[in-house]
Length: 101
Image (cartoon, rainbow, N blue to C red; front, side, top):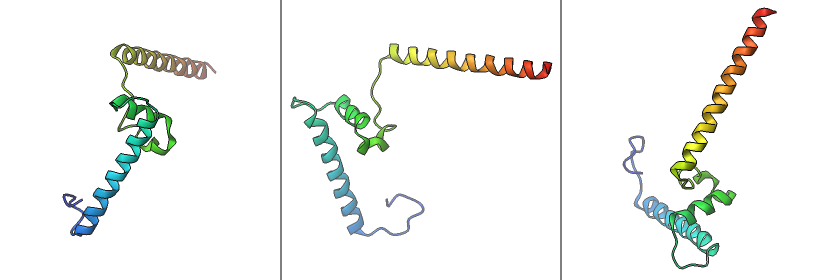
């Protein structure tokens, strides 16, 4: 907060309260993830899973994504590129048929 160029003054109380709120939020996130797992070890994938499945944490989807393998990524990329190519072809066909009319 203090490093922001748009903020001139931040009280010490605000810093302490923000730090405590962050601590409580992280504890809440960790407890939710731990409750879904019957193990004493909490890992990244446990946190990512709770973020993905619980709408309460949906704002964290981009920050804590579910890990995927390189193989899964390449498959998704290929599917996306195929969809994009198909869409371009469809637009060209539509444009050609409009020119003919």
